Length: 272
Image (spheres, helix red, strand yellow):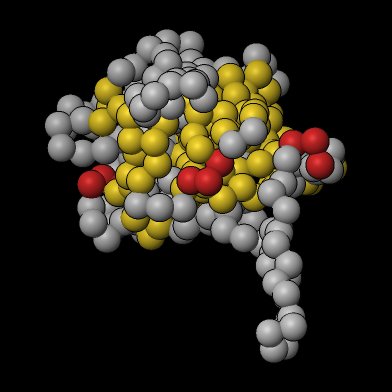
C-alpha cells in the first residue's frame, strides 16, 4: 500500500533498497477497502409506476455539514483529471481509478481524496503527492462526495492520538512517533488505504492505514516512496516514545476497532 511505509521497523533498523517493492511490505496483505461509497447520500424514490418521481440527492457542501464533519471525494470513472485551477485548459495529470497496490492487478484501491474547498462545478482536494500538503482541482462531476463524521489528530509532543466522531472524542491513546532523525511530518493528511497484515505480530500490527503523508527526510524506502501511515505494533513498550522512521504506531486493539469504522478520506491532522 502506498501507505504506511513505516519507513519503520525498530529504531535501529536500516531500510532495504529493493527497487521493485513498495514502501509497506506485508506479504499477501488483505486489502480492506473502507471506501466512502454512498451511505450518507442516498437515493430517494419509490417503486411505483410512471407517476413516481425519483428524488435527486442533493450534493453535500461544507456549509451544510454538521460540526466536525468533512467531505471525501471518490473518483467515479476509470480515471480522474487533476487540474492546477478551475480555469486550466487541461489537467496537469490524470490518476487511475482504482490504483494498484504494489502494481498488482488483484489489489485495487479506490481513488479517494479529502475535500478542501468547493467552487461551482469544481472541487479542490488534498493530494497524496510530494510536497506534503499538495492540492489540486477535480471536476465535481468526476467524483462522488460523501460526508464523513470521523477525524483523527496526532499530537507529536504528547505522543497521543485522538479520534473524533463529529465533535465527540471517541478515543485517546499513546502512540510511537518518528525518531529525531526521521521525524513524523506535521500537517493535514487523510487515509487513502487500509490493509490487514497477514501476520499481526509484525511491526505493523494487525492493521495499517496508509496516509497521504510522506517522510520529509527519507525519499525512498524498500524501493518505493517513503510514505507515512498509522498502524499497530509488535511491541507495546514503544508507545509513548519517538522510535519510528516516521510512521505512527498505536494500540493493536484500538486500530482493529477503527478499521471497522474509519473510511478512506478520513482527515488526519498531525500537530507538534
